[in-house]
Image (cartoon, rainbow, N blue to C red; front, side):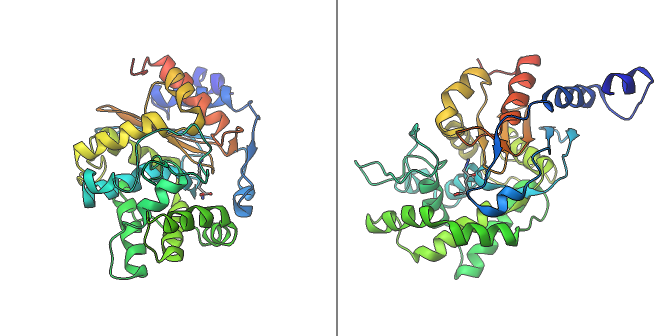
Length: 316
Ligand code: DON
């Protein structure tokens, strides 16, 4: 059907979008993996949804598939939250709260670096929860607003939260509670612990589309300047630190194989989103909810592998 549309001169797509559309048509037949169900609300995602969006640093948007379907950002939020912390507090202070070493462990490991009690990096839950404590505001409501405002500035539009997923995260997030209370015990966070956790659950439940994520990724590619609004959201130096940690820790225990195959800093989340960044050039976002055993989108990985191979985008 894709080829036929082209041969009869169906002219609504640019060549890049036609390429992306063809790519998705090839990948759509892959039905491996399963939708995350450890948070009951996530299990309701449509497993067939599939999207890819590429946004360049000069704001051009190329999309194919379900680019405007909303889903919760989940762990794709983590590099941005790290960026927030760096921007507000500077590297020295942030490094007292979180390291930059990959763990090779699952994202929800209940483990800290026993040399200094820090979470290993900001891409695992422990590190992200430690970053949540750094949100500025006089009270919980203000800190919530700070968070939503920051993510909205990255996306270039006002984002909202999925109330039902948030409730589900909060009702079932006992492992995250264990992580947070372990950090409270070791003095890595100071509390109030339930409020810090609440900010983390809210962060995971922010609604985005693949188009939003591609804009956010492109904003990292543009050294922190939003490619739609022109706002400098975080500094180029902080973007460098964010991308460095994404490169080593963004894909969990698949980070090494990802870097080998795709060669770009990236971040995945359990709702099926992945972002990848080619600094100075473009951001890519893919969305497909079926995950592999590590928690990465099966078809999302495949799209990124083929796209970077076809356009020779591997950093090395
Ligand atoms: O902490 C959790 O369980 C989730 N809300 C976020 C997890 C996530 O996306 C981890 N990444 N693959």
